[in-house]
Length: 392
Image (cartoon, rainbow, N blue to C red):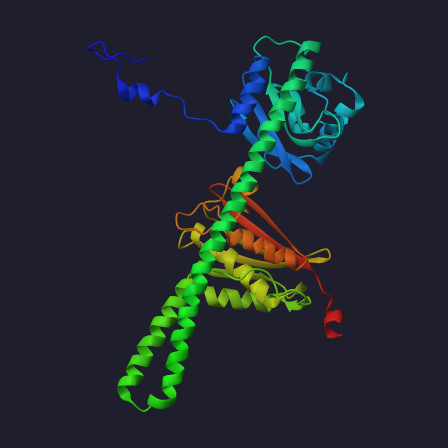
């Protein structure tokens, strides 16, 4: 505590030393680490079929970004056994432990143990994550009391994390309800616009020769256009029409249209050979428009956006690459594709969510690679169509 010259505490300097609040996930890591006097820990959370880095508490051992391994997730989900990393490094651990621990954890000598977080029972439950504990100040091997305590605490921590995710899902559902309520007001605005334009069309049949009417009609049409543009900025169409068949799409032509339309707004560069993919031309153009808009907003005015086309195996890859502010791995995994979550102050939070939904509806995939301070690459992958199939 800092004491001022008059003997009283300095409130300003004292406030600066109050620790910042930590997230629920970080509190879970700390609680498990405290049981064994571990000075820090890393939470690994499900990321597809593997485990990716989540929250940390005093963790400075290794960077697990992009180093996920499906074997560890599969092993912990099936066995739910606490893994002693020192035995893995020494070669005395069971063969299953040796085969499942990734190289980056072996190389991190301060990583001491892996505690699986299984919800719904030790066997047959769902793996909601795992905690890697740092080596305690007094170096020792885990004993049976540690195993029993960490096993019980891991199940309890798993229940907390599962409950937190359930609350997040309920919050998303509530946001959708709010969106539906807002959509009702938008429909009301559209109805008023249609009524207004219908009245103008009806009166035009009788008063088209009246100069004063024509002036009023132009003013009304301009006002209606402005209002509809404002509505379109708040609302976008979702998903292709049900039952609409997929068709061969000239990807290069779609990319060229998007680039031409956007060049007045921001520098756009295109590259790549002609390619044909299975999908919907209008939907692909919509997806590219969403991704290019995000790239423009994340970039400086002088940094061009690259639109690239290449064939990767049996799929066509369309990349949207910027050199803007980038995103953290945690934001990409937990926030980017959640509806109504946006890093922009005025963002609606459905652009990336909508883009992925549209791509999935075309039988494709949307991947993203991003680094903070370096930029982002969104990659659209669609089934390729051979030139002979197109000609047929």
